[in-house]
Structures are given as C-alpha cells and as structure tokens.
Length: 260
Image 1 (cartoon, rainbow, N blue to C red):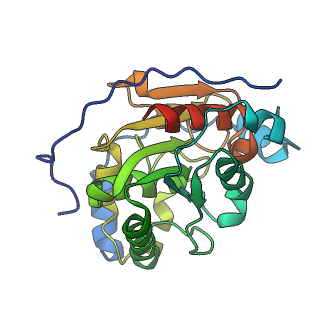
Image 2 (image 1 turned 60 degrees about the horizontal axis):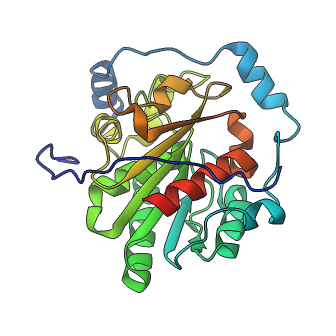
Image 3 (image 1 turned 30 degrees about the horizontal axis):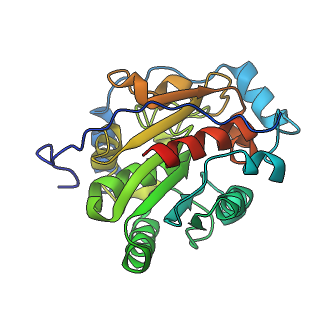
C-alpha cells in the first residue's frame, strides 16, 4: 500500500506571525477515479482569466524584504515546482532562502509533468541524497509540487523535517483545477492515481502548513484547506501563477520554516 493509517502522527500547533519587513491502466484508473470524492468546485472563470493575464505580483520579493524575514538555521530545503514548471520557477525563492541562511535546492528533474513513476522515483532519490548529506529536509511545494511534498512526507517520513505547500489542492487533487483533469489520467497509467490521491489528502505525519488564496484562478482555494485542521492553513492575497515571486507568500513561507 502507498499509505498506512496506522502511521504515528506527530502533533504540532501552528501559531504563525509573518514578518512584514519592508513595504494502473486506463480502465483501472477510471475505476479508481470514480471512487474519489465528488468535486467541490472549480475556480471562477473570471479569476482564471485574471490569473493568466496578471502582469506581475502585488509586491515582488526584494533583497530589502528578505532581510526582514526570520533567519534560517543552515538546514536543507527542497523546493518542488508546479505543473509544467522546472526549477526556474523557484529560483528567486531559493536564492532568497539561501540569503537567509538556509541551503535551498531545486529538484533537478526538469519540468513537473505530474505523478509519473519516473518523477516520483527521481524526487525520492533527490530527497534521499539531500538527507544523507544534510539531515532531515524541509519541503516546499508549489501547486502540484506541494502534492509531491505531502506524498514524500508519507513515504519517507524519517527524511522530512516539515512541509509547506503553496496553493496545492491536496483536499481534491483530481477535481479542483480550472480545467478537467480526469480525462488525462491515462497519461499516468504507470502509477496508482487512486492511492496517491488518497495519500495526499491525509495530514502529513510531520509538521505542515498550507498557504492558499481566495484569488486563486488555477485551483479552487478550498481544495488547499484542511477543514478539520484550519489552523494550519494560511490565507494570502495573490494570484496562483505569481505565488513563487510574491512577497506576502515569501513572508509566510519563512514564518512557517522558522516555527516548524
């Protein structure tokens, strides 16, 4: 099995205060998909249009802002990109985390094409190698990258220090995107999508936090919230596509890293 409900859960109380600084086969997949929870909703088309046409963040990450954020402890941070993106998407964030004293790494696997066996094995090896050199690793995942992060926390709990997801639809991974995902499930016929979807919906067995935005036009914001543990979920005001360079998101990411 991909996931055991008997796995011990570490307790963690999230009390965050951001530093503001300066201003299977196709048939099997279809059967598994049919057993998933009914879809909650999708983003409004108006929000999706605004997300795709937004020219820039409300406030971009700057060196002045970074200096006002909590300092790192030298630990390793693995940052996982969103769907169809590679490490270029997270370059500014990783560089800023390095400035704060963390050791931030990309996943070195090219564009995120979703949960293929190749990528799942590759990111597991990346985590294992980093942990062997640096000790337990903090995970940050954007959108689809956050689903990988939660999966890794279940699969390799002893290697993971904590997890921060940013606009990652873990509560409804198959039915919350702006476009229908289920018709594309056969693209990932070499993995058990049903088991993966179930796993990422479960709270990670390590300290975790989820950052979401009601202005998200790519995934339904409620799919990024755990209704049973809302205190671990933090709301920001930004567009999905711009989250990796958004100052408010960075403030909260560093607050989470420093308190978990």
